Length: 256
Image (tube, rainbow, N blue to C red; front, top):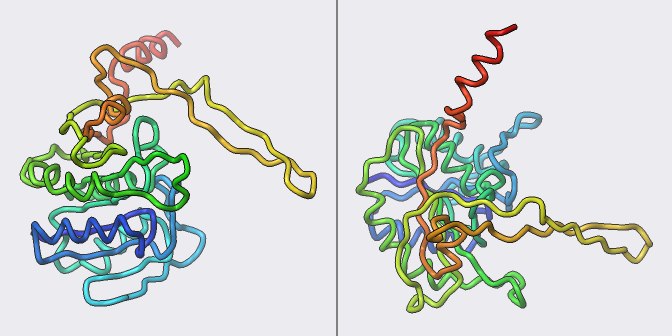
């Protein structure tokens, strides 16, 4: 199995190093093509207004001066063009990618690009309690549970245009309740907070705060699964068409 690793935290991120260790338990043909610098929040963006630079760090390890999507494209069409990967693993991200986070996340977007190219792709993220943590993120849950989650996923056929989004809860590994397959959740967008502060020069600046999760019967979403202490596994697909609206829109335009 040829495995490509990437992320959005940068080629030197501790989560990527952990993922590389886990990937080597499944294969000895592991490649890393990841952004040179942190690209969190870049979503599914491409670098179009400047050249993309590729730096070889060692055998099978490359850094890309660009986004996670750039990194996947450079891997598929430049670095590994003679033999494409069988699997793309993106992460392990520093912080969860739950609910609508997937639309902003460079980690998930790298997996999306892999799915577009027809390669089995999995995004992995580690939630953490932000209070008092600073830049230190405990990856203990991911360290123990990543292999347990990847084993079944690597041996499961995934439909074209789909990817798996995995999130590990912010718990010691022995307190993790198990794995829950669930749908993507959504937060209460109307309760998003913007906190205004003033800098030493008297100019305002702002912090964005996320709204609380929307509760569902049976706690069926990724947001709730991780909050309940489970590793969440959510199958996502790239077709954003809302099928129930097709007939209504066709009827609307047929009357014009």
